[in-house]
Image (cartoon, rainbow, N blue to C red):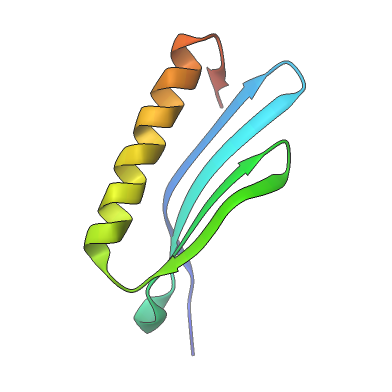
Length: 75
């Protein structure tokens, strides 16, 4: 039985625009890494290597910081 656990999430908005960064642990199946912009999937990847997940998380934090610096609001 697989249980999904959210290990990272950032949601930012700017007017009607939404950007979401999500990492879910999939038990023994690895991790699901997803980025959405205005409810359209920009990135949807599955990793079994934690180091790749760490890099994806670092990139998500950087992107979220860039958006915040340009006026987006974290919710």
